[in-house]
Image (cartoon, rainbow, N blue to C red; front, side, top):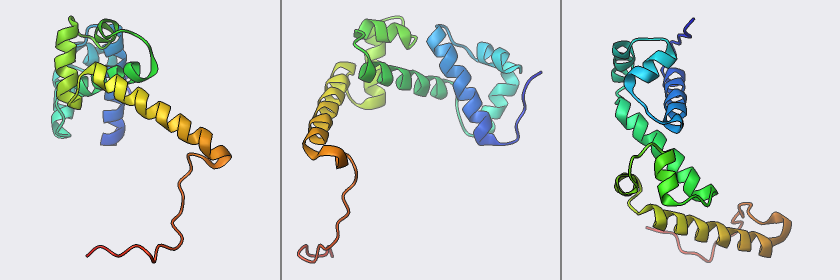
Length: 146
């Protein structure tokens, strides 16, 4: 039996999980998501509209999350990531990724790698307390902004 919820946030989170799973599996459609949720496509569309969310916007967010994670955490090439995120061509993926992030997938990966390697070097220099926020105790020497 289908699980219904009155909590819009939980319902949207459930829809997002299904979309992410189907996006990773390959083809995705409103009909496939509705079927997985045990509802009709029209009912799913109404639920999303009630929350001010568009189906394809959720799909795009899911694909961006998948692509970002793969770029950051794997050595897969752009073509493999494009396929995993559900794009038929690397160029379509690159255009969509640039729309989402403002940068190319390669530049995104390089920036993340540079940032994470700089962070690990910083942690190594700081010993066991590295990476924890530092409290500013007395900053009377710094003028206040007006």
